Amino acid sequence: MQARPALPDPNLHPRRFVRPNWYAIRAIIRREILREILFFKLALFGPALQAVLFAMVFVLAAGNSVPVVGTLPLLQFLAPGLILSATMHKAFETIGYSFVFDKTENIIGDVFGAPVTAGEVLAGYIATASLSGLLIGLTVWIGLLPFGMILPVNPFAAAYFALAGVIIVGLLGLLAGIHSIGWDSISAKDIFILTPLSFLSCAFFPLNALSEPLQTLMMYNPLFHLIDGFRFAVTGYTDGQPVVSAAIVLVILCVLTVICHRVLRSGYKIKY
Amino acid sequence: MHSDNDIDTSIGSNLSPRRYGAINWVGLRELYLKEVRRFLKVFTQTVAAPVVTTLLFLAIFSLALGRAVTQVNGVDFPVFLAPGLITMAMVQNAFANTSSSITIAKVQGSIVDVLMPPISPGEMVAAYAMGGVTRGLLVGAVCWAMMSVFVPLTVHNIGYILFFAVMASLMLALMGMLGGIWADKFDQMAAVTNFVITPFAFLSGTFYSIDRLPEPFYTLAHFNPFFFMIDGFRYGVIGRSDTDPLVGVFVLIGVNAVLWAIAWRMVKTGYKLKA
Image (cartoon, rainbow over all chains, first blue to last red; front, top):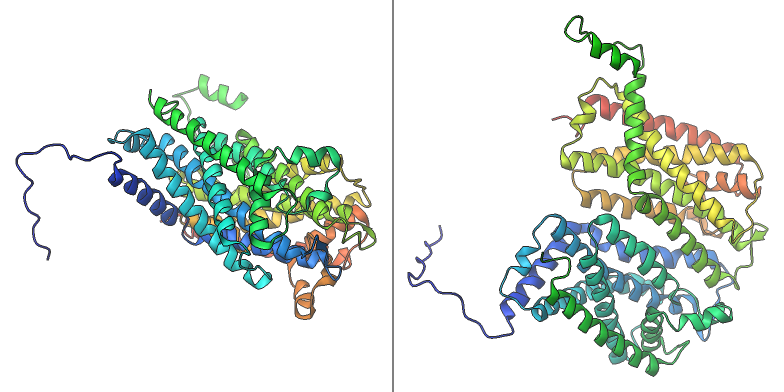
């Protein structure tokens, strides 16, 4: 038996807060993370299993002729790519599919009707994407430990690229979620844009496996810079220039943040 | 259409139930068409998406292993890989079609639309399974067409190709029915896909010859029906296989007969379908 709650103050007045509205940001994060856990349950370990399957298949297909990429055994080369691509994909899914769900169920007003600014909504969703992406990344990392995955050579750089990765792709997920009207259109963006960008980003093969025009083209794939930078931080092997990659990544992150803030503030495809 | 018109003109005078013989062909056809229209309506998700994913798999595996692995079973690695990937795409989509159709219908309650009409369990299993097979074959055909741009695909034995394509899709379509009937929610269905179907599809010789497997697994592979369907389909394409494809023919017939019987029994008893 619980004590009966006290009657509300008869002089009701709006709750006062100073910006930023931390309460709202916390609520958004809590809602999104709980939704992930309640909806996916066991399937949350899907990405880890998928990465382990990829690793096993690569080992078995390579057989005795275990290839060496640069200075690394194949699996040590692959593992950072597998981890970061799973991490980023989860960040995209978390935000993108959540927006589409809220829109199709007509409950998007629960977020945008509350006394929150666009900046606070953005902060809440970025934090959600980072949290869920990085946690999934951690499960993939643990799953790949038996396959020779190592701890990062440079933990700070690894954290930088991982965080930048989840935020950038999470923001892409936010834009995709806002733009999509239904499940069909968000999953089309996922499969036809994000998946090719991430599969063809040197996550699974070295840059020199490509012939010339494609090598230059790869430099325009933002995910290449994220994955190559992350791989450099973890293993010390790089196909590009990690410092340049770090700068490019930072610029993309800032530009995307500004775009997302403007889109959220304008209420594009949300408020009408 | 004629019978509809007949009823319209004579309405009120001699209404009687529509009669049909041992098999309700109209019901069977309509349920099958419903299954096909269901996936064609969202064909970017159900046909184009798996084709793109399969092509990406071909690209990354050829690029990552192209130098280290030049030949498998006497053919170039991409040529070896392509039939395996096509089979994998076919069966995963056959499974996805029946399982998602039944799970969604159960969650939304529209399953009564299928349970109420005068359709026998056999007709229901046949219609759903054929819907899954249709999607599997369509995905397989489009994958084949797209892949042949990059990889020289040959036809060694068209009979084996068609047999294994149909039987492999049928096997997974029936498994999808069992999974869809068993699962109460989407997360259970996702768990079956993630933890049962995907590992079997990945580890049954799509990407490598099973000679590569260390001993207990090499023998175990011969008890894995997924291995026979991939191996058999590949035999039809490149003319080489790890086992005699004729064994695969019998294995798949046997497995499909058993799965069909289980699915039929589930529908007949209304397990998890009727309250």
